Length: 163
Image 1 (cartoon, rainbow, N blue to C red):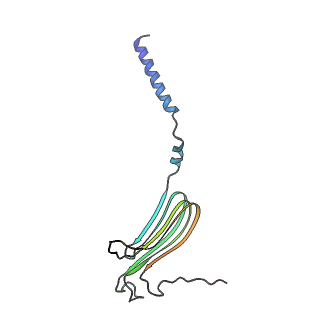
Image 2: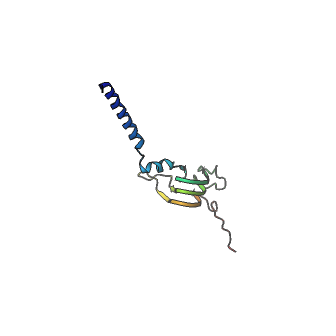
Image 3: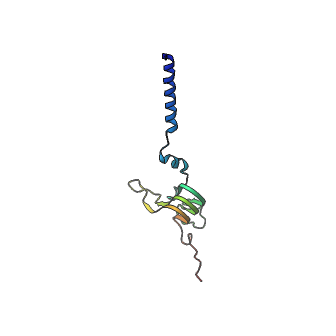
């Protein structure tokens, strides 16, 4: 054999070997599962800085999500012009959230209420807080109501009598 033919055979052998190794290579075991899991996320964060109220509704690793969330936030000034039903009240307002969802995946529902005025150290004192982390198949029905400087009778919950 001539050296030219031998060189061509070696080149063909290297080319065939490199293509075979590419064809025989397999992806890692977790690759397919990671590609099929789109890691869907859906988040809602609402804050009312005037009242110090905030709420978070977040879903992750969602396979199925049917969500209906309604959030209302309001603020009124210290002269009562935005809250005519309570002329003597100071500045305030509120945050209300109605959550109704059906989920297959993970959920994070949280709310926090802080005093809008700062302390000597420049911090806002925590008034109340709630955190719920859920994983699995579940239905959420939740109503969150955070108010500041409310007048007597302004915030009320009506209960239906049992029969």
